[in-house]
Each structure stands twice: as structure tokens, then as C-alpha cells.
Length: 353
Image (cartoon, rainbow, N blue to C red; front, top):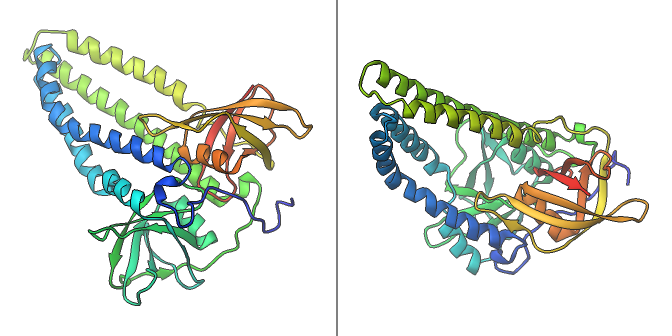
């Protein structure tokens, strides 16, 4: 198929008129993230105890208080933006996703927030916060799936090919300054011209760099606090300094090893579509990452194994649902490279045997 023409790319979609939880891999993700969110609720109660243990072990009162403030601040910052996984799971067991096609003039934006009319009403608008790759995908496709509302009026949004839901807020009118987003043609183009892929890639790399910098900065801050405590004779125990210095070196080594694959440049050339037969359904880990093994067919008819380890569940779910694997560039036996879905905010690393 010519990459320069408008083309249809089959991607993961909810099942029509079926409970949302029956969507491929979506139920497993709901269960995993609901459990993970439960662990995060324990953190605010565990941190005070942990700081006491650290202080008693010589890490220092200042260091322990810094840790308490950082964790509490992080949770307070992220809580309003988080998905209520329990409410979402309860709604997904009872209701289906409903497809919504937006008219050419029916999408507006103010910064990172998008607005569109809710179906069946003339006065209610949906407001959703979307990152740049999701916004670019929506501008091209003009299509999404809505779940809800539940008894509290909560709705959730999902885009084709993307497993992660987003919260939707109902507003009565467009805000001042809302700009209409014109429709654009959706074309399958080479990876280096795919604006959705490029934006998604930049967001992933930015997230990795921010996480690495944040944890590194926190360790440096804790180490500085412990050194200050020793210098001011608030404590004479050097165990805290040694512990934090070793932790920093271990994190740095493991972090570089884990991140270096995703920050490599994307292959250039074209998309290569391969038939993929999974050995079994994807497994979702506690961190929300997926693992999937499958057999793929090469252009010459040969079959070999491919392994997706700790990838975005959206990538694994697309392979599972469509039995297609989209490789960026030309795949090679024994290589580890990137895979995604053309025109969708999906990307991950795959290893060929």
C-alpha cells in the first residue's frame, strides 16, 4: 500500500454494545491499575513511619523530613489529575463505550484542553485535558469513544488504538478564547513525517528525562541534607551518607540501562506491517507495563518469534486485537527496534529472535 495516500490502519477499538471491560486487555489494565492506585493511597500513611525509621537509623531528621515533604507534595499534585480506577472499573462492567464522530467544525481547544458537544444535548460540552500527541490524533481522526456518565456524572474518553482512558468534565459553554481546530486529512506517512508519532515520542523521552532528573535531584537533596546534619553535629552517624551515595549510584546505573533503548533515535524509512500471532494474551505488570510474545511472518514467508517486554499496554493490545505488528523501518532478525501504530499515539520496543 502506498504510504503517500490516505489509508485505513486497523487499530484497537472497544467492542460495540458490549461492556467496556470486555475490550481486549482493557479489563486486565483496569484490575492492575486499581490495585496499584490502592498502594499509592497507603504511601501517605507509610511515609511518616518510614521517616522515623530513617531518622533512627542515622539517615538524619532533616533528610527524613525532606522525604516526607517531597512525597506528600507529589501525591497532592498528581491526585487531581489521576484516574479514579475503581469508579471507572465499576462503570466499565455495566456500560459500553459509545462511539462519537465529531463534525469538521465541532472541536475546540484552549491550551491543553479540548471541547466538543456531548451527544443528545444542545447545551452541554465535554472538556478533556489531552497531551499534544492525543490532540493531534483527535484532530486527524475526529473520532473517539465515550464511557458514562455514572451516577456522579463522571465520563471517560478513549481514542482509537490507545488503551489509556482520560477524564471528561461537563461544562455548559465554551470558555472565552476557545479556538476551533480545523479537520486535517489522516494519511499514513513514513515515521519521520508522522506528527502524532513524533509528538508521542517527544513526550515519552521528556517523561523519562524528567523522572530521571527528579529522582536524581531528590537523592542529591537528601544527601546534602544528611551532610549538613553531620557537619552541624546534629548526628555523628555516617551511615546515612553512605546509604544515599550508594543508592544514587545504583539508580544512575540502572536508570541509564533501562532508558537508553527508548531514547535512541527512531528508524527512518517506512512502516513495515507484519502478521503477528500472539502465544497468549498480554500480561500487565504492577507498574502498568505489558509483556507479550508472538510469532511473526516475514516477507519471505518465514516465521520467527518476537518479544515485547515492559511496553505500553496499548502496543501489546493492538497486536493482540489486530494480529498485526507495525515496525518502524526495516526489521532484522536478532534486532531490537521500535514498533507502533501509524497515526496513533502508540510506541514501544520489540526484540526479534
